Structures are given as C-alpha cells and as structure tokens.
Image (tube, rainbow, N blue to C red):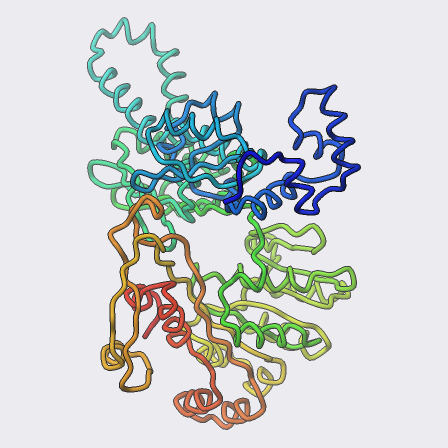
Length: 569
C-alpha cells in the first residue's frame, strides 16, 4: 500500500486525473473557502466524486465499494456514533471476526482510522467510497432504525395496557388519544416491516394469519425466511392499513383483491403490488416489492456463459423474428429482457413494450401497462403497437392463441419481438405453443430462439466449504460428465456476517439457449420426439440448464444442493 502521507493533489496528478494548472487553481480557491480540496475540484467541474475515488483506489491500492447498494447490518452501523459518521464521512459496513470493514471518503486521514480503531476495538480494513453513497446508505439505515421488532414490542405493550385498563370512565376519557396512538403505532409497525424487508433485499412479504398469531415471512434470494409473529389482536389493523394505502375495499374480506402503492426509502422508490386471499384464519396478504429505479444489469453482467452470451448477441442483432425467454415465476425473465432492451435502446430504434406490470421505467422507450378491466390486454396492446412504426416490441407474456398469432405476424413483417412464457425448459415451450391451437409451421416461421433460465443462489465466498467429488458421484446426481475425473466443488458453509448467516448471498442465472436452426426446425416440424431433438442439440454442443449450472458450480459460484433445488437435474 502507498504511504498515506502523500497529498490528494499529488495523487490526482500522478493518476493523470487533473492538470497542474487545475490543481493550482483549486488550491488558490481553497484558501478562500477552507473547503476540502476534493470538494473544490468537484465544485469547479474538474472531477466527479467517482473520478477522485477511482484515482485514490488506483494509487493507494485500497479497493473501492459503492456502499449505497449494499445491505448493511444496522448493528454494524451502530458501532460508531452517528455524529462521527456524518462529520468524517465514514461508515462501518461489515464485521468479520476481529476485523471491521469501514468505507471512507478520505483514506489519507490516518487519524480518523485510528480513532475508529480505538472506539470499536476492532482492526480496521478501509475501503474507498464517495460521500453521496455514504449519505444514501445512511438514509436507508436510519430510516429503518425503528425496526419491526421494536414496533412490535410497542404494540404488545399497548395491548397489555388495554387489557389492564378496566376503569370504564377512564377508557371513555382517553379513547380519542388512545385511538390516535394506536393508529400511529400500526403505521409504524407496517412501515418497519417494509423497511426491514427492503434492507434485506426481499422480493416478497407474506402475512399469514394463523389460529393464534399472524406469521410474517419474506422471500430473500428465492427462499422464504421468518421475520416476526404479529399478535392476533393486531391482524385486522395491519391488514386494513395495507388495504387502505393500496386502494382496496376494506369492507370486502370474502373475495381476493389486488392493489398497489409506492413507498420511498432513502433515495429509492419501491412499487408495492399487494394481493389478498381469504383463508380459514383470515385474509392472507402477499406484497411484491419492485425497485422502481432498480439499476439495469448489462448483458455482460447477467451470468451468461461466454458461448451463450455470444449466441444471444447474435440473436438480438437480427432485424426480425421472435425471441422467447421462458421459466417459472421469479426466474429472472424480466431482468434478462430489460438487459436486452437496454443493449438495443438507441436513437435510431423505436422500441415499444406491453407489460403487466411495468417493473422498470425507461426514459426513451414507450411502455404500455395492460388493463384487462378496459379490455387493454397483451393481444390488443400488441395489435395497437404495430400502428406505432416499431422496430422492436416487447410483449410481457404470451398467454393465449391471439397474442401468439399477432406476435408471429409481427415477426414476419419486419419486427423483432421479445416475450416470455411459463414452461420448464426451452423445448417444452414449443409444445406449449401448439397447445394454444396455433399451426406449428406458422410458429416456426417466426421463431428465432428460446432461452430457458432459472435463478440459483450464489454461495457466500467467505464461508463456503470445498468438497471433492468424482465423476461417479456427479453421474449419480444426474450430471453428464466424463468418467475417471475428480472435481473440487463447494457446498454451503455455516454462514457468517457477510451472508447474514444464510450461507448464500445474492443470485445468479443458469441458462439454455435454443437456436432454431434449419436442421432443428425440420426435426420439430416432422414431429420427431423431443428426445431425438434433444440428442441432436447435444451433438451440436448446446448447453442445457443442468450443464450450465454444473459449469458454474465447478467455478465455486453455487452448490449442487442449490442446483438440485432449482433445476430439474
């Protein structure tokens, strides 16, 4: 690591980030304002926050992290006083044994690192970040400071107080203030549940009434985890609160309902899609959390193998045809399609989408939300979009014969069409389209390719554990490998602070890309069994879901147990 006594100006000069004249001008400006040099350089427009951070990273060999996108444990943040964090632009982000990782804007200040070491009694591992990312992380952390458990404890105390209060006259006098306090407490409880779920990167929240309580669970990386248990006395209050804000009928509990509303947490907005269903112990409610400003992932970052990625880029460069992405709900189909649209979104291209719901808003793409109540369906929306001079059309899902026929017609008249289906693999999508009652030869005329995918959890790189396996071991589990080999794979570890004791952190895609070349199309049109088609695809080198998953397991990215859970090996 470079000496930390070197000045910021010299580091930026050595990195070629600024000129000598710019530095001299900024130093002269600094004399009058007494600001930090970095702030002056940013204000004068010579550099951005990121320019300075990257230059420091390169010159000091201290890694950079964007902490605004991290799930930081509030207990770790609480290791330092809020005043120190805000004054010095530092933020504790993870604790591993005796070592505390701290994000800093100014790594050239050894005094603050020593101060943190003395306050926490941990060894300090600094990483470089920007002031704005620390501010965003702080907003997220402190907005959820009133945690779900704290809110629940307050509500339990209030319930006990109500039960003990038997003086009717006192109850009458205090009823208005108690009603107000109770309403505020319910609001805080609901908001804290949402905040906790967002902080833990949950995709769904389940409120499940039982005989003596309401179980609250949330889905993180595709797996449900318990969050808390709400007392039965609060069931109606919590459900009613969510019904009110999402525009549902609070008097109707016998029929399923749908609603939605938007919440803001930190600098981000989240769209909440809420659905209720009547049950024996009351209405169950599921909340889907959608990040409205969620960062688009580039095609190079969504875990396609090099071969599949190259094939996909060739497919989306074609001027017309249909590309389907298939898989169960929650398998990342929308993310893949949005990444493709982002790649193709240029000033020379007119892109239209028909979606339900619109999960990410593009500034330069026309996006249509379907609304069956007014007969705006995928089919009618697709038909209308053809009159808008489109080059590329995304249809959220092909569910019926009419939508499929219009999509094929669009592909045959010079349009590139993307859509999704719900099938187990690429080949079964063809059978599914036949079941819709559309002529197979008509379908094959417009169909370019089908991508099947799943999302599997990533092993935590800090606590994963290696294990040796032979070819025979893998074959017993259904994998196709050559005989006589030994492999080093990894299994889930015991869990650590990095993965929040879950052994996994994040998810990744496994894919199969079926390109409908002439020979394969002929086999399908002749009605050959899928086993024959599959055999010919294997001979051509196609990598199926299980093959792609095994390749990633061999790289230590996921475990065989996770593949068996998600992929039909």
